[in-house]
Length: 473
Image 1 (spheres, helix red, strand yellow):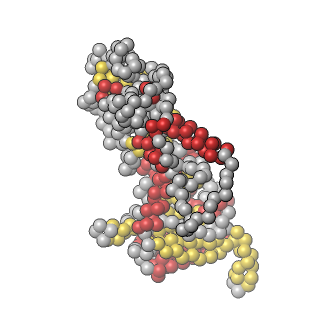
Image 2 (cartoon, rainbow, N blue to C red; image 1 turned 180 degrees about the vertical axis):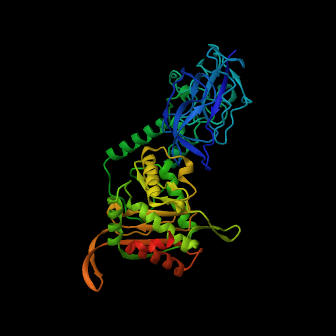
Image 3 (cartoon, one colour; image 1 turned 120 degrees about the vertical axis):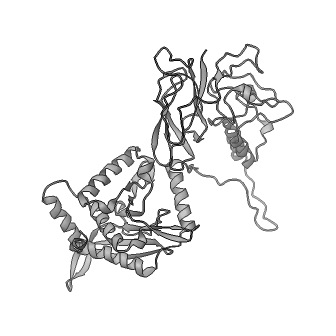
């Protein structure tokens, strides 16, 4: 007798609590092998292909592409054979492999048998299988099968998105036929009475599309009517509670994670910024000489990173974090250097581990590898977390300066503007030199302005005279 096993969205690590379905790799009815990737999801850190720990036939998928699911929500169900190996020779108990925070070595406690619904079962005889999602494509609360969901009057629970369309619904007194709290909130925020709607879902279930259609229809009727001049307010302006019009872009995935982190940084860190102009002519000449000597090419970012690690060795206060619960500043021994990388998915900050122990050639190679992975969306959570200091080269965008926002929970970030020819007094005479603006934003809890200024001045001295680095080699 086949059994239906439920595979839930596993904990993908690094404190992630949700993921967005980007692309399903299997269809309902497909045969899957143990550990076969079944869905591609996007977390706040990276794109991840999620493997299924069971082998069998996919009986249901939960959530459409673009749906955001919380960790622990059902992803799909798989019909597997008896505990003995099936015809394909695979063990139906699962792979035994363990995803981060999600074990599969034991069979789930809840197992359900696959049985077709009787023609007269339920309220309309529709099957209880299929992909059980709420009107927004998200998994419904509780189990995916109809028999495990209480049905209020006029509500058909347990119908999948692939169920045949129901006949014109007849609304009765009692609960409004809507399941999703998101649909209720959308109607409430726009002043829409759900009892006036006829749902297009099974048994008249009101879907999000029904609410959006009603709102568009109301807007069309409103704009089609001639508008009369509004009477002057007698007691001041009337403020509307309706949401502002315009294009709404959801803050989710990478963009949502960046928004949360930047907001937290501004909220928790008393930051300050200092900056200085530096003559980078000699640094550019040194790089040219290095690359002319043969061997792998050295990037400018790698030289700037090497300068940062040398400055952090001299001013370790800026390679730290603040533990407010213990009321301590924790100075860190290793420098894990983050660098800002702009991708099609948004801004990400890959981390070069043990940057203080790398030379310019090793730094160049690691920057190149992480940048390529960032653009491809294949960075792992470990490659996007754990930084202790961030280098932000916004000069690639053609700007001279900025006030960087610290990458919480770090204590500082160095910003580097574009390097361009400018008039500069060199050796007592006016000359055209390659000038760059350097900006340091620092957590004022870890040091005062003297330390921050000393760090920035040392960075500028190394930029103007790279031979200063020889003291730290």
